[in-house]
Length: 387
Image (cartoon, rainbow, N blue to C red; front, side):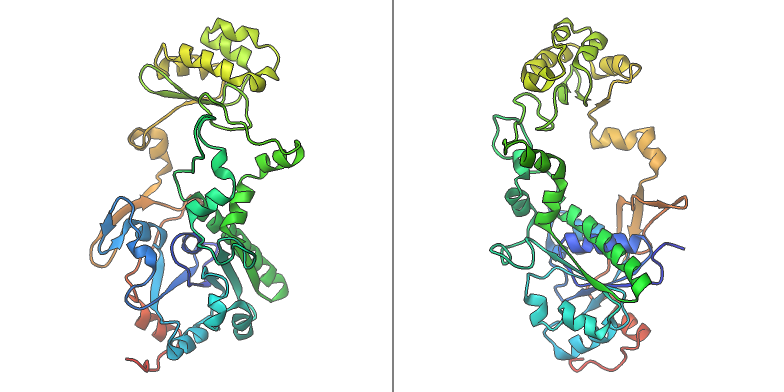
């Protein structure tokens, strides 16, 4: 039995942050019903990565919406909303990421929903919080990264601001929403009452930076100082970074510069005996390392560093990773299939429970694929007025 079996989640969200939270709840055993507009469905169905699609939907939609059933519902149709409210009365969790105010105008804001079902845990995702001067702006990942200051931590000092190459704001916000929802469910188990969990892309990006932002708040407001050479962390000293070898790249984490010099046979590093110099003179140190590490292969350096327990790693491509025994040992890939026979290879849930690696039970649904099934199952059997 998975930890959340028996719980019913209504996912009214679109794109990535809310649906990724619902995905994780589904992986953990909850029954997730994706509530979508008839016909078009979640706009993420047409948000493509490299123009790749499967069975009429983007692969991005497939990966973020597996393990869910789809219920077609027009939120501007009173009959549809009435049926949805009956479903809300049976639900444990509701997730929505409409812009602030929209869900209330539809009659499905937290106050209304909690009157229907006082036990429900209601999760809201916004871009920049429920109010304030940015509340109405688009809550999109790159825009949130840019407003958060995060983009000034990446890249070398001579470069402009550089975003993360992943939808990091969406994914972090989804993870925070799951944490809040689970906390709300635990509290409900004690008090019997649900609650309203709110997260935003901006707050998640700020929390992601909590270590370095706290440093900034307590060091007189010094701006981040990115290394001009192989920057990998604006607030960490040499040798932290990635270095080119004769046949690839080598990652070096934090560690003693003088010890590193001894291991690598790099005599100039012996001069940097003061640990404070490892930050103050890090570009100087890194330039020495750049020249030295470029003289031999990645494996040569690993053979020296690994036995000495100096923190390092090869920089691997996806192909190299997927072929490695360490990756295969994780058994991290799964194949999901629609009723049409369309198949997608994707990753599984990263959480193991009681030795059980959690795998998907169903592929991402078509729009409204389970509407009739759900209405029968939950007693919503009257004919639709628009049928």
